[in-house]
Length: 374
Image 1 (cartoon, rainbow, N blue to C red):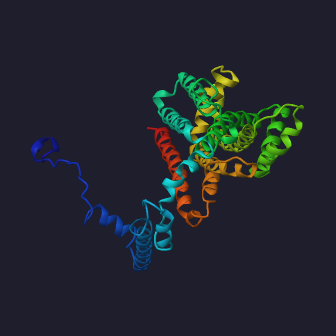
Image 2: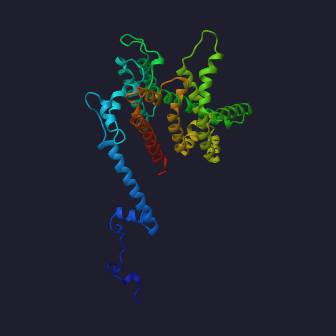
Image 3: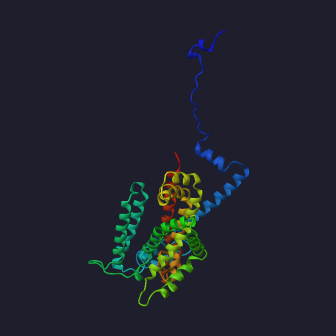
């Protein structure tokens, strides 16, 4: 009887790695069959939706490009009125874009808010790179904010002073959103930790703050900051309405972010707390080095969702007389000659909002991918 050891090794079957064959028709055809045309009902619905989307896309292209007026010499409004209802009048954008972006800021000084806006964007880009997440980044933020303040206010040799009443447009939106989130995020962390505190007084104060702020709309907070807050100040003391609105935004953002972070803290296993206590770490080191990084990693999507909603909520400052980006867009078409073409102005502003919100969304997905365990 021949044993297995007597059989030549060359005669034994060799396990070769199996190669995955590409799907028939290519990956695109395979995806279409699996997702759009998998059954008769799915095929009918898919074809109807594709037809409706194609019709809408053709109409949009005709209105926005083929029949549109971009810029014409002479009387632009006459050319726009001639194609009204058939095409877009994009000529209103080059005519009004400076007022939309910078409001009533002095025309010859509008390079200053433009440079401040670019400084904000550069600051966001630098802060998004993990290689720059060091202690020096705080100094970069402080220096950049000083530069932005000098550009917007002026009052130094070579830069005339411009009061905050003349500020408007995109810089105001970025100021409210950036400072609101920059100060609201650490406030939210402290409140979230306070709600989990073992001290009844601290826990009760944090619960009262969160429930009070979240129980009223942001508009009411802005009204309080604009109308009621000055009544509690001593005679002769007055705080600019932009700063009052900024305080309201910080308090509003802190309350909502506190609840999001508290959800992340509850998702951290109890064993992590016990391990930190076993190492003899203090309360702040335990939370700063072990608990909070894990908690924030769990709640990246709702955090960014709150950031995006907060960025768009800055348009509510219209009710207290602050000209943010959306308000300057509305004001720019008061001119009767351009008033019929408000859709184009709102689409231009919507594009600006979309760029910032989409960038935050993509960056959150990037952070989620990096936070995934290997």
